[in-house]
Amino acid sequence: GVDIDARDDGGYEIHATSYLTRVLKRYGFDKASTARTPLPQGFTADPTHRPDDQTGGSTSRSFDPAEIAGCLVFAAVLRPDLAFAASCLASAVGCWAPKHDRAAARVLRYIKGTLHRRIVFRRNAPLDLALWVDASFANDIHSPTAPGRAKSRSGCVLFFLGAVLWFASRRQTATAISTCEAELAALCLGVRSLVVVRATVVFVFRIELPPTRVDEDNAA
Image 1 (cartoon, rainbow, N blue to C red):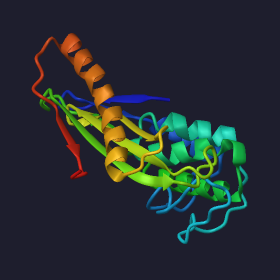
Image 2: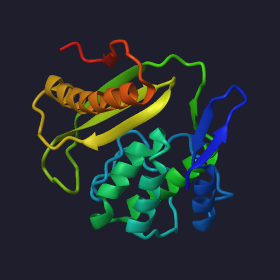
Image 3: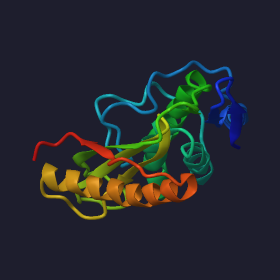
Image 4: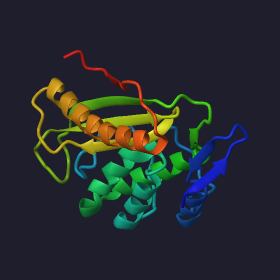
């Protein structure tokens, strides 16, 4: 399911085009219209919650919850832009509803329009790391696995050689009581992974890395 292409400049491109093409054909979306985003703004996995911005039309398609969620989670390994959608739909496997069928159809239509996106490692890129971290405060109040609990979500992206090396979109396990606490939890998740990746890069490349810049947008 992983494609690796050599570039003329000596770098590499890693993508999942072949796998995603098979997924689209399997579900009959290889000739479907495209969507601009994987999910609409305000989407939650709760089957009873319907945000004003719906998932974009109706669909007669009925997906096997575990099957389609598994396909998207696997695809998200090489597609950071699918991480949030895959996480949301995977959390709804036990309470699947028609809104999730519509959401899954929208994700597939988004994949159809972004089929050839890939992670590019450039040969002459500097050997340094950069970490971006953010959190959404109490946006998962409609979570099907934690009803009535306002969970926040962490988002992290770690870059190496100018490309995405690691990323995560995860619901926080603790209930944050402020935006500052939610951001600190996300920062902790990102830095824990950063420490491991830095040690691995130093061991493999036998180099000394400069301090890693961490971008986090919360003034608190």
